[in-house]
Image (tube, rainbow, N blue to C red; front, side, top):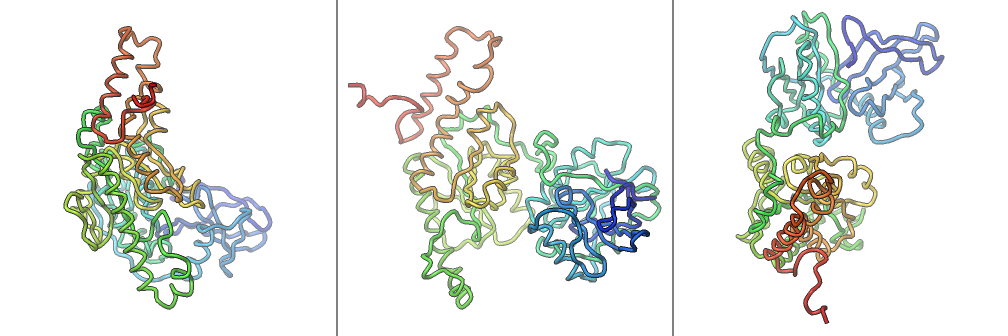
Length: 454
């Protein structure tokens, strides 16, 4: 936590002369909290981003007159460049805030948890920090959230402030947000901002507090394999391979015929997903398969596939999708396709990753903690070069062979003190073998086909 009032409890050095100083004001710009600084030694005036959320990694500094970066960070990236751009295009428009008042502020120090972000996944993870701060009963917690995530806010906060800021607008420097927030804190003597993480640790929160639904029961994995549930999350601007050849889809054609290129790309991408769905059904005849995501329900899909595509966010349809994820053995999609909630709720996740996004994807799984071996098996990163045939085989293996993997990696099977009966291991291996009867692709892991016995 960082104290904002009655005085800012943060010391930093002037980037010009290195004089130690304390910021004299704080500004809520929407996505960011920034401090106003004035160095009395060299007369430099500058803004510094508060070390919270992404600012923990990238606490940029801007010259107040020129807007140029003057921090000592040795790199540029999208976030630091975003700070420069936000300052350059500051907006004075009013920002509406809806206040849900569970109690009046002022009797306790106030904690501000800012979850406003330009990226849905970041905002969601920042919201998950609420669990940690709700346990601090000596404070009144205020959760600041955008409209599209308000339905996920957990119970227990003193107040919830719902900001009318779209994800696309959140990256801007919104002076109206500061004008809206400050009056709501009138009469509060002590104010702190939460030093929240962009990716809250999986052990810090219970997804049921947010989704109001229980996740997939891992203990019922095999029992539900008579009808395995698999969900593909579809997003038109996130796909695992290039569908159109470069002679058709290039920077010139996208500039001249943007609508046509998008239409053709989406059409052939969706045909690719339908090819995958038919291939997976061939291997798992009783599969319960669904396609979810934010999109129009065009083109139509076969009747045996559940269609959970919706063109815009709606709380009720979002809850339908959550229920589907919690019923799913496996959810898969391409990196950036809103896999965080499915990761919290589904039994397993496959993330298909563009090559230059590997490190980003590896750090974004919200793990449901089991044994290390089982977690590695249930959360999978695959490269964008993956073929339909190979993807199908991996999906089948995750569904079919998890029990065998647990036998090799998880308690009680690797616990010397488990006191299991002498033949418990072999009996479990037989059970793991028998689940393969739900699949068309042969028996379970490392089983030798009869044709190879000779």
